Length: 296
Length: 174
Image 1 (cartoon, chains in turn yellow, blue):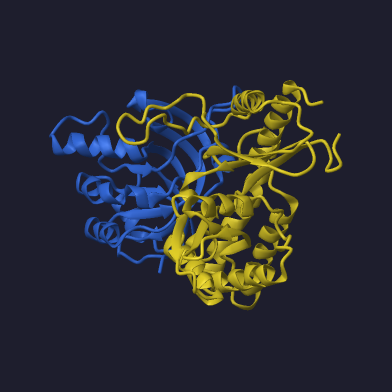
Image 2 (cartoon, chains in turn yellow, purple):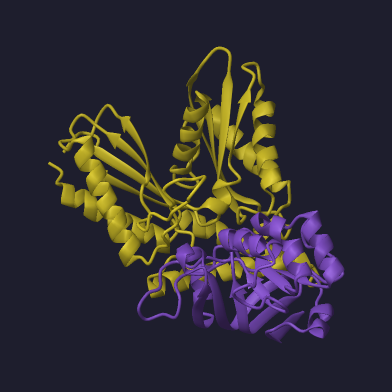
């Protein structure tokens, strides 16, 4: 039995943690990128791009330490909160109860984590700040077993603004998809705070592909797609992105992305929607699980 | 090359800097982002008196997170500079000496920097906590109603950034 207070508490804790710490695999990849620049500078101390890139990566790692020590967000853009809520047959709470608890948990984290109030209530005319960093963007999904899983993301908008949807032909090739993703990253260039993390959604309707691209970003960094064909595409896409040489901060260099994930879904015979969500290096997420897959 | 620089930036200092130089800034800077730029531009075009003197200033593109009680300011890293591109040539014409944000600038901004012998500095994107530790004081000087997008005056010490576009119009970005 899940109590709404448990949901509130775990959501708050997950968001607070996400705002101050990155998953270990991501930090390792940042450290590897730094090691690459250091290596370049050993053989060519005059390489200004490598020196600038190294400075940025060192600043990022120092920044992460300060954020954790001081209990403040690593990045001031604590974003819009995006939540994917997976409800299983064993969940005792209503959607309404879950969403209320979610919003309370967000409110708690926004206050105790010194987030920024970055949400406006109406996008075009008045753009009045809601003062709460609510509403969150919430996606509901049913799953076949278990109780309740809430996947949470702090989605900053420098990178979100670089995200795109392209409607490819149903006969599009693997290469067409790869090129589509790489072109979107190329246009983004140094704007989304590289090195970036990329989520790609293929299939569904236009909007569903975008949702899939967000789900792709919830995959743990370094975990390939279970389908070998998509895993290979993830790897090739990452390599192709590195060849753009946008580099950390857009200063140039061989590490433009830290990870690429794809998610796919059934789609119409006439189409192949492809959506790319770009996340900055501060790919902040937390996943809260209630009950095991065998129900609890 | 690394340069310790006292703000405000004077022309001799600006003209001595080249792309890829590191700067460590100390002194006062103005903070403005999207909505403040829109407002300042509207006021300039309507020949209204601006709430602050922008001549010779460095504008840092930033909107801070909430301030913890024991700190001067909350997390305060740079925002994406290209969104301010449409407003920057006019502001430079009105005397803004330099701007600081993250990511590339347009050709029009690069040309304006060359024309006015200005500067664009790239701060380290996402490093809000690091930069919060470099702020010595801050006050809201105008546009209070904009909340995190208000016009601020920031006093900083040892604030690191990289010269991304220099006064000759050289640019880091390809």
